[in-house]
Length: 171
Image 1 (cartoon, rainbow, N blue to C red):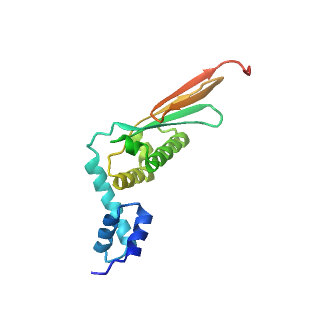
Image 2: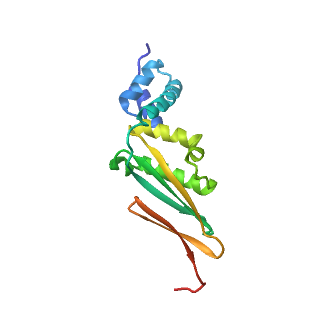
Image 3: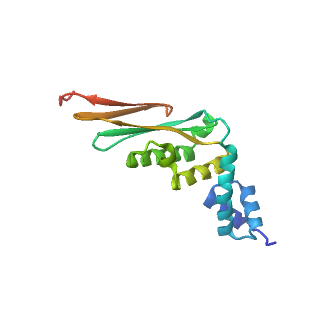
Protein backbone atom coordinates (compact mmCIF):
# COMPACT_ATOMS: atom_id res chain seq x y z
CA UNK A 1 0.00 0.00 0.00
CA UNK A 2 1.36 3.38 -1.03
CA UNK A 3 1.87 6.16 1.48
CA UNK A 4 -0.64 8.94 0.91
CA UNK A 5 0.74 12.45 1.34
CA UNK A 6 -1.16 15.45 2.61
CA UNK A 7 -0.57 17.20 -0.72
CA UNK A 8 -2.29 14.34 -2.59
CA UNK A 9 -5.31 14.56 -0.28
CA UNK A 10 -5.36 18.34 -0.71
CA UNK A 11 -5.25 18.06 -4.52
CA UNK A 12 -8.08 15.51 -4.56
CA UNK A 13 -10.15 17.70 -2.20
CA UNK A 14 -9.64 20.73 -4.46
CA UNK A 15 -10.63 18.78 -7.55
CA UNK A 16 -13.70 17.08 -6.04
CA UNK A 17 -14.81 19.27 -3.15
CA UNK A 18 -15.25 16.21 -0.94
CA UNK A 19 -14.31 15.73 2.70
CA UNK A 20 -10.69 15.09 3.67
CA UNK A 21 -11.29 11.59 5.06
CA UNK A 22 -13.30 10.56 2.01
CA UNK A 23 -10.46 11.75 -0.25
CA UNK A 24 -7.85 9.97 1.85
CA UNK A 25 -9.83 6.73 1.76
CA UNK A 26 -10.27 6.98 -2.03
CA UNK A 27 -6.52 7.53 -2.47
CA UNK A 28 -5.70 4.58 -0.23
CA UNK A 29 -7.99 2.33 -2.28
CA UNK A 30 -6.15 3.33 -5.48
CA UNK A 31 -2.60 3.32 -4.05
CA UNK A 32 -2.31 7.08 -4.50
CA UNK A 33 -3.59 7.27 -8.11
CA UNK A 34 -5.55 10.55 -8.12
CA UNK A 35 -7.21 10.02 -11.52
CA UNK A 36 -8.42 6.53 -10.55
CA UNK A 37 -9.63 7.88 -7.19
CA UNK A 38 -11.66 10.54 -9.00
CA UNK A 39 -13.17 7.90 -11.30
CA UNK A 40 -14.07 5.65 -8.34
CA UNK A 41 -15.62 8.61 -6.49
CA UNK A 42 -17.62 9.50 -9.59
CA UNK A 43 -18.99 5.95 -9.79
CA UNK A 44 -19.86 5.87 -6.09
CA UNK A 45 -21.64 9.24 -6.33
CA UNK A 46 -24.38 7.59 -8.38
CA UNK A 47 -24.85 4.95 -5.69
CA UNK A 48 -24.96 7.56 -2.93
CA UNK A 49 -27.46 9.64 -4.89
CA UNK A 50 -29.67 6.57 -5.36
CA UNK A 51 -29.57 5.82 -1.61
CA UNK A 52 -30.61 9.38 -0.74
CA UNK A 53 -33.32 9.59 -3.41
CA UNK A 54 -36.00 8.33 -1.02
CA UNK A 55 -35.40 11.07 1.52
CA UNK A 56 -37.82 14.01 1.56
CA UNK A 57 -36.55 17.17 -0.10
CA UNK A 58 -39.01 19.94 0.79
CA UNK A 59 -36.73 22.98 0.92
CA UNK A 60 -35.10 24.53 -2.11
CA UNK A 61 -34.91 27.35 -4.58
CA UNK A 62 -36.73 28.82 -7.57
CA UNK A 63 -34.99 30.38 -10.56
CA UNK A 64 -36.49 32.21 -13.52
CA UNK A 65 -35.08 33.27 -16.86
CA UNK A 66 -36.60 35.29 -19.71
CA UNK A 67 -35.46 35.21 -23.33
CA UNK A 68 -33.60 38.34 -24.48
CA UNK A 69 -36.54 39.33 -26.70
CA UNK A 70 -39.11 38.68 -23.94
CA UNK A 71 -40.98 36.15 -26.06
CA UNK A 72 -40.85 33.40 -23.44
CA UNK A 73 -39.74 32.73 -19.90
CA UNK A 74 -38.91 29.69 -17.81
CA UNK A 75 -39.03 28.79 -14.13
CA UNK A 76 -37.49 25.83 -12.32
CA UNK A 77 -37.83 24.52 -8.77
CA UNK A 78 -35.02 22.46 -7.25
CA UNK A 79 -35.40 20.98 -3.78
CA UNK A 80 -33.02 19.95 -1.01
CA UNK A 81 -33.61 18.45 2.42
CA UNK A 82 -32.69 21.54 4.45
CA UNK A 83 -32.89 25.28 4.03
CA UNK A 84 -29.19 25.45 4.94
CA UNK A 85 -28.32 23.59 1.73
CA UNK A 86 -30.86 25.62 -0.24
CA UNK A 87 -28.76 28.72 0.52
CA UNK A 88 -25.43 27.04 -0.29
CA UNK A 89 -23.50 28.53 -3.23
CA UNK A 90 -22.89 25.09 -4.78
CA UNK A 91 -26.61 24.34 -4.70
CA UNK A 92 -27.54 27.75 -6.11
CA UNK A 93 -24.97 27.39 -8.89
CA UNK A 94 -26.58 24.06 -9.82
CA UNK A 95 -30.03 25.71 -9.85
CA UNK A 96 -28.66 28.41 -12.15
CA UNK A 97 -27.12 25.80 -14.47
CA UNK A 98 -30.50 24.10 -14.71
CA UNK A 99 -32.37 27.33 -15.38
CA UNK A 100 -29.88 28.31 -18.10
CA UNK A 101 -30.30 24.88 -19.73
CA UNK A 102 -34.08 25.20 -19.46
CA UNK A 103 -34.00 28.61 -21.13
CA UNK A 104 -31.79 27.29 -23.92
CA UNK A 105 -33.63 24.01 -24.60
CA UNK A 106 -37.18 24.93 -23.55
CA UNK A 107 -37.44 21.32 -22.32
CA UNK A 108 -39.88 21.08 -19.38
CA UNK A 109 -39.68 17.28 -19.07
CA UNK A 110 -37.40 16.94 -16.03
CA UNK A 111 -35.96 13.57 -17.08
CA UNK A 112 -34.98 14.89 -20.50
CA UNK A 113 -33.72 18.22 -19.15
CA UNK A 114 -31.44 16.64 -16.57
CA UNK A 115 -30.05 13.71 -18.54
CA UNK A 116 -26.34 13.59 -19.19
CA UNK A 117 -24.07 16.25 -17.72
CA UNK A 118 -26.74 17.86 -15.53
CA UNK A 119 -27.62 14.52 -13.90
CA UNK A 120 -23.92 13.86 -13.32
CA UNK A 121 -23.63 17.31 -11.73
CA UNK A 122 -26.66 16.58 -9.51
CA UNK A 123 -25.17 13.27 -8.36
CA UNK A 124 -21.82 14.92 -7.60
CA UNK A 125 -23.62 17.62 -5.62
CA UNK A 126 -25.55 14.99 -3.64
CA UNK A 127 -22.24 13.31 -2.82
CA UNK A 128 -20.56 16.57 -1.86
CA UNK A 129 -23.40 18.01 0.22
CA UNK A 130 -24.78 14.76 1.61
CA UNK A 131 -28.45 15.49 0.99
CA UNK A 132 -31.04 14.44 -1.53
CA UNK A 133 -31.42 17.03 -4.28
CA UNK A 134 -34.33 16.76 -6.67
CA UNK A 135 -35.49 18.81 -9.61
CA UNK A 136 -39.19 19.13 -8.82
CA UNK A 137 -40.70 20.99 -11.74
CA UNK A 138 -40.06 23.26 -14.68
CA UNK A 139 -42.40 25.47 -16.64
CA UNK A 140 -42.34 27.50 -19.83
CA UNK A 141 -44.54 30.55 -20.50
CA UNK A 142 -44.80 32.04 -23.99
CA UNK A 143 -45.87 35.64 -24.50
CA UNK A 144 -47.74 35.21 -27.75
CA UNK A 145 -48.45 37.98 -30.24
CA UNK A 146 -47.67 41.46 -28.88
CA UNK A 147 -46.74 40.27 -25.41
CA UNK A 148 -43.69 40.25 -23.19
CA UNK A 149 -42.90 37.84 -20.40
CA UNK A 150 -42.01 39.33 -17.04
CA UNK A 151 -40.60 37.52 -14.02
CA UNK A 152 -40.07 37.99 -10.30
CA UNK A 153 -38.51 35.82 -7.59
CA UNK A 154 -39.03 36.67 -3.92
CA UNK A 155 -36.43 35.37 -1.50
CA UNK A 156 -35.38 32.61 -3.86
CA UNK A 157 -38.43 30.54 -2.90
CA UNK A 158 -41.47 32.16 -4.51
CA UNK A 159 -41.51 32.98 -8.19
CA UNK A 160 -43.84 34.14 -10.91
CA UNK A 161 -43.80 34.44 -14.68
CA UNK A 162 -46.42 36.68 -16.23
CA UNK A 163 -47.36 37.75 -19.72
CA UNK A 164 -47.64 41.49 -20.14
CA UNK A 165 -49.63 42.90 -23.03
CA UNK A 166 -50.44 46.45 -23.89
CA UNK A 167 -49.48 49.52 -25.81
CA UNK A 168 -46.11 51.05 -26.40
CA UNK A 169 -46.60 53.89 -23.91
CA UNK A 170 -43.71 54.57 -21.60
CA UNK A 171 -44.43 55.28 -17.96
